[in-house]
Amino acid sequence: MNIKQLNQLPITDFLNRIGIESSYKTGENQWYVSPIRESEHSPSFKVNTVINRWYDYALMQGGKLFDLAERLYPNQDASSLIEKINDLFLFEQQMPNPALSAKPIWQSASKKPVTAAAITINEVKPLGNNPAITSYLDSRAIPIDVAKRYCKEVYYQLEDKQYFAAGFENRSGGYELRNAHFKGSTSPKDITHIENGAKSICVVEGFMDFLSLLTLQKSLHPIRSDFLVLNSVGLADRSLDILERYRSIFLYLDHDNAGRKTQEKYESAGLKTVDASIIYKQYKDVNDYLVSQKSSQKEVKKQLTFKKSGGLHL
Image (cartoon, rainbow, N blue to C red; front, side):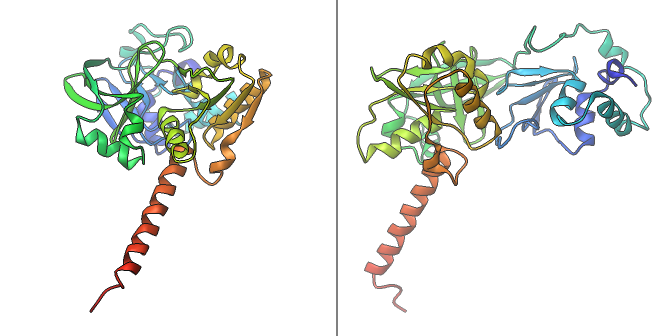
């Protein structure tokens, strides 16, 4: 089969054949932990089984089966990929699916992006009313008094089901949503710029890292800096015109391939960046470091309490 014929094969079957299974299904969509990005914990990679297209919401890119194969195997040329996919489907009937070919399709994700199953916000409340949300923030080592200044409780609907999450607003009015079981966002997706009148700025990937920075600095001294929360490294280009105004740009990015590429993008743009990730060099991101610090403090406190009690009296 050639590329055109390969693109008629079900993307879900292709993923199953290479050992990648979906996390859950909603209607015509199957959701996966992204196979083309590192260190993702919540599914944000969707395959629409009706039009047979994939879309990665963090990268804001998608396409056909062969586009996905190129992402999964970047070191293989087109002829090698064609051979590989043909081998995977060797014993399948090599005929295009007429139901798929009869449907209108997107030529590419860059021309017409796929939209997610619509998230409807039903209510937004001040943080602190919902114990489950407060408990989730506590599990991420974020004090409620820190989160209250920037987050809300967002009650939303996905298809016919009701949910709630900690919500962080972007500059266009959309929300990043986080709870113990979900990582997603409402439309429109955008960056968040927090201005304090400073000449320096701290750049983080997500709002949990932003809240983590505030938490880490709280006991030391007030942070005299502006902040830029990307909400997705795929939105880094939108931040360039903002960052060029600052004298110093401190990068608190993740220790993964996406973080490195984002740093390279900023450096190529001639921005005056400082890699601040050295403070958590043994951890994936700022929040991982914070959680580790809190766990260590709890263990030390536990040991001190044990010593003061004289140990166990048997």
